[in-house]
Image (tube, rainbow over all chains, first blue to last red; front, side, top):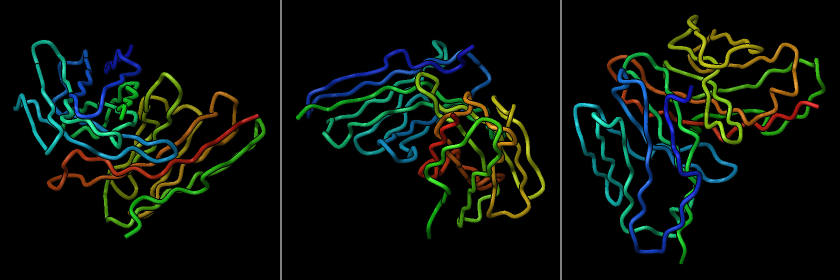
Length: 112
Length: 115
């Protein structure tokens, strides 16, 4: 049973436009959520996170939105740049358990 | 500051062989973990440790063994390799306790092929 789902395996966006990556989860105990970016042949790198006490967190061009009632989070990238082309993973955790459940990833391609 | 270092980067094994994937970090992180990445499956937690002498199982622990004798090192052992263990393996570490931020720091990965 996939507790964290990224239903879009891939997404293409024009440079300068908004990229929206989505993630759904089933376990209502999750209270901390993260987004990671991964380039080929590299390890994932942390992008942004959000605690369940918030519904939005911003860091520069990246904003994560959390809708707890829908068990849904999304990552917005504005404006999108060609260097943003990568695979994006969302992850969920129960704070203090040190167990992170990852989604299957969405491959973002930003077209110049 | 090297971060999280994994060796080897590539390895080919025959079924039944054993090997150890090495992971070391120089950030004084208490928490360390191993993930495997398979196509269509995302990253799945194999084992993790919250400090020297303490280890616990993740989602997919079968066929793997770990130990944590020092803060810096967290080796992953495959006792009898099987083709189903063909994967890319990532080691990750983070702060824990009051310093926990949730952010995991990953190594560059080790690609393992079992024939």
